[in-house]
Length: 245
Image 1: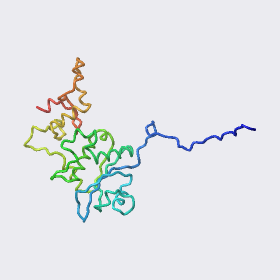
Image 2 (image 1 turned 60 degrees about the vertical axis):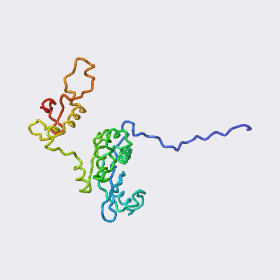
Image 3 (image 1 turned 180 degrees about the horizontal axis):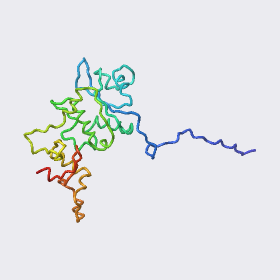
Image 4 (image 1 turned 90 degrees about the horizontal axis):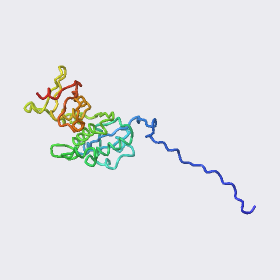
């Protein structure tokens, strides 16, 4: 019959249904994903060259960087061999690990670290090596939101890097006794900087122990000095006035 049209065939979509990890019950922690820090040991001795990356398989990745198997980064094609100094793991997703890697490489571009970089965390001076700078940035990131809320852990493979990690902590000198406070709890021997403990009390929920004010305007004002807080070591409830006597 003229003008008759053949019945159209039903179309089938080959696209896969989209699933988002943001929906309740869809997100799962990856089995393992880590950020790592490499250091060059060219000509049999360590030097200033470092490299930060991320991977679900550190043993395979270090072999790639050293050219034993295919797939290494272009930057690690030179200055071989490389050794893995440490890994940081416990990320809730690959995306978070990649974001962590980017900030570790470029801390001066991160909005989370810009206000804390004075002097710049990525600056190398005559008394610091590139490895020390990378460790300093990593330590700052682990104590800064949003990364401080994740169950991140650091595993060292090199004893020298492990020692540098702890040597970077500021030492307390007896000659400047007014700059630090001892916990008043009988079985606690922690000593902390005066300013550091004040910030800890102000930033922690322990400041809610302060007596409420009848004036809501006064209650909403930002505190300059804490009223009380919990010891970061033994968690004892401490009054600020008693500590600074």
